[in-house]
Structure formats: structure tokens, C-alpha cells
Length: 201
Image (cartoon, rainbow, N blue to C red; front, side, top):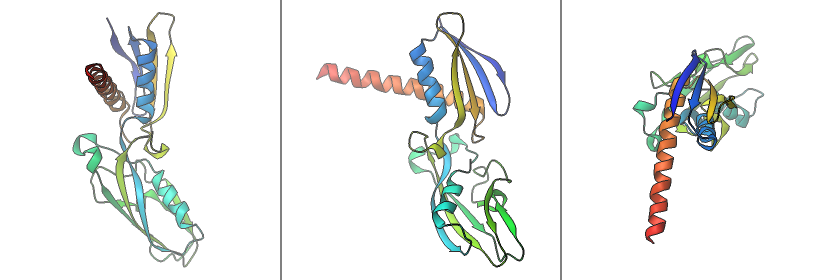
């Protein structure tokens, strides 16, 4: 008999005890929690104006690495798209452009913080972009990782492990674990079905 017990949890991290769960399943869950749970990230950027010293590619990369709050229940992974816009305006004095100036057309999918730096502009410089975010998984690119860390440690008992997951902020830690469990169950069911089809052939 297996069971899961929450040892401790807060807004950033959760630690759960997996009892009666074999190492291979526990490790599969660990990997899924790290990079197998879908979250939003900016994937396409249209540079309308960039008179800063930062290359267009660097701005695109910086925008892509900003963690975005995600609400999985409202979106289908194959058809998800949220638009963002940023316009620094005409800069009169040196200043840093931050994620606070990145506006979203969705009330939930937004940067997890207003204080993430994007670019430093000198007087007379301007950045204006349109960007599009979609759901993705960390197996495709690290910007879609749902967790910063996902670590499995053994206890002194057989088939007992402690899974610690720290969120990027896109999802609550418990959402990552619960979605990870559902994803693992789905993958196992798909594997069993494919195995059954092979046997029939």
C-alpha cells in the first residue's frame, strides 16, 4: 500500500513523503515535476523598435526567461496563446526597464514579479515589442521548467522517499506535484495501451 504525506509546504516549496512507491516511479515523478508540467513562457517576440545597445536576440531571450503565472485549467496546451506588449516610450534619463512594463492581454498570465530587469536604457533610447506566450514543457526548453529544483532523497526505509519541489512561481508547488502525478498516471496508461497493441500485432 502506498501513500503520500505533505511534510511541509509554503508558497515556494513543498516536501512530500512517498511511502510504498518504488524508486523508478518516484524518480519519474521527480523528473515530471521539474520539466514535464506545462507552464507559460514567451516564445515569439516581434521587435517593433529597438534603439538600445542590446541586440534583438538578447531582448527576446530575456523576455523568454521571465517566469509567467499560469492557470492550467483555462487553457489547452495545443491551443494556448497570450499576447504581451512593452513600450518604454522616449527615455529622458537613464533607467532600467522591468517586467512591470510588460502588459498582458490576460488577467492571470503575467510575470511573477514586477522587478525583473529586462534592459537598461540611456537617454533617447527606446524599446517597443509585441510578444506571445504559449504553454510548453521544460523538455523542450528550460524556460518552460515548472520548478527550479525537484530533488528526491531516500529515507532509511524501503520504498520511502522524500520529494522536494521548488516552484519558479508559475504554479503553486502543490499544483506542480498534483499535475505531475496526473501526468505520470497518463503516461503509464498510454504505455500500457501501446504495449497491448504490440502484443495484438
